[in-house]
Amino acid sequence: MRWTSFVVTLLPTAFANVEKTIFKAPPSITIPQTQPNFEHLCLHTLTPSRPTLNTDLAARFPSEQAPRGIESWHLLDDLSEGQRHELRICWAAIQPTEFWLNVYTLNEVFDAPSLVTSLAAYSEQRKERASCGSRSTLNPDTGTGNRRSLLFLRVQSAADYFTTNNTLMRNPPDVHVDIILDPYVLGIFPRSLLPTAVYLLSLTIIGWYLSGYLWSIISKPPRANTKAHKA
Image 1 (cartoon, rainbow, N blue to C red):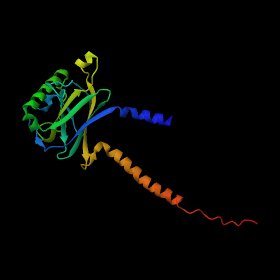
Image 2 (cartoon, rainbow, N blue to C red):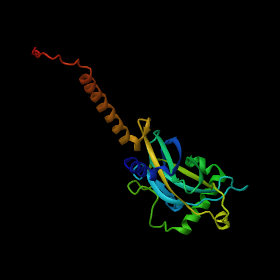
Image 3 (cartoon, one colour):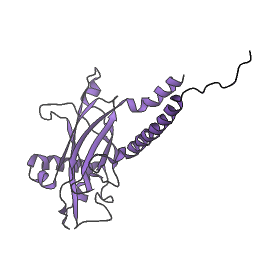
Image 4 (cartoon, rainbow, N blue to C red):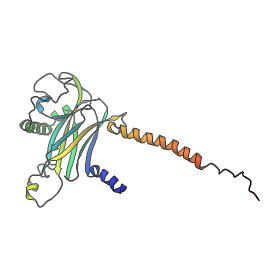
């Protein structure tokens, strides 16, 4: 019964998929105080202080025109220049989907016509579906006209299943995802794993001393019986 309860507690984390990319934050650039600015792009923004985005992403079956399905764009802002970061996207395995993650600097996006076109198209779709006028994608503490390290994130999502349901084949449902920005600590491991690392290190130290104590008890020779036996 105990083992059954233990397995049940693991079920929520077992049925999940993860795709990730690792990158270094680019050099800071000056954000000009001109219009339009990043706010008008109407993109979801992730920062080290707001590292998680819980949202739904559209998915399409691959085609000749779009071999990787459909594209969505996001902004990674207020990064620490030169620091390693990990970007993860997590989704339920009951929604089979393939994801591709790419990060681009500002210059890389605006120097490539295909990227600019894709970004502009997604931005227009966002403006039609969401009210972005009152919600800035910029950090309200810094505003515009300052130096910051930022990147654009492009997510490509393609449905990865086959069904006899014609409706699902024509219009795959949106995929519920968590997008997580995770800075690295000392360039070694993601910050989100720090509590786990501390926990494992504590277990290791306690286990080391506990095993030594138990071994000292076990390795002691048995005490001799000094009582004289009556004849």
